[in-house]
Image (cartoon, rainbow, N blue to C red; front, top):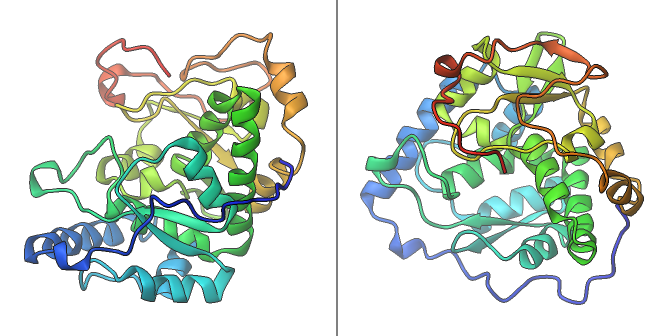
Amino acid sequence: MCALVLDTPQPAITFPQPVQRYDAEDHAVWRHLFQRQARLVADRACPDFLRGLKLLGLNDSGIPDFERLSDRLEAATGWRLACVEGFLPDSDFFHLLAARRFPVTWWIRPWAKLDYLQEPDVFHDLFGHVPLLAQPVFADYMQAFGQGGLKAERLGALHRLARLYWYSVEFGLIQTPDGPRIHGAGILSSKGESVFCLDSPAPNRVGFDLRRIMRTRYRIDTFQKTYFVIRDFEQLFEATRPDFAPIYADLEGLPDLAASDLLPEDVVITRGSMDRVAGGWLDETPDT
């Protein structure tokens, strides 16, 4: 991805964290989610994530103050948090990442939706994403992703980049001496998928391949049918160095792949059973 000169370092849709709007129940939800996920991922998350949790001082005392957390994060890798209402337009999202600002939704889910939301909340954004931003190589990858996203918009290739984000930043695994571990925020903030992704025989687990991922559709409403496993974060960052324009052009004539597909050239770590019940894939809604 090529670096861009940014005229607008931070879009106007960010605002100060409305701490006065949190009540006792909001903080109780945070404590419950943090305690549960911290226990669950203690031996499932990649070591860099666990180090980031400790370095940034994330804990179960209540919803963190964004400014204090930003100060710790900035000291580590130069990133700061940007408070937002929720999903952002693509251009705003990529501008923030390119300026080393990570958008964090301010509100937290209610008790009634403790285990699943289709939209991000403060727990997903802070617990799932932010600890790895304290890791220098991953922090650089996320900035490069923002820069590349602005270019992909102009080239009409956002769907390619969305797939890379989905299968790396949100639902990626990483190889460690103890076997695959979790680095994707969508998994780390999910009670069910943090177990499923490593323990279930249903999904495929395949070695990371940039072009292959950009051809692979995904689902937002079920556990994943395929997880891509990186060797290390340097491999992820190296993948963002090239200019993606020729890659987008090469992929234009190739068919998309279903989330469950395996190719002869795939580095298959685990061939999934594709059991629909075990995988939670009980309908035939098309992949994105």
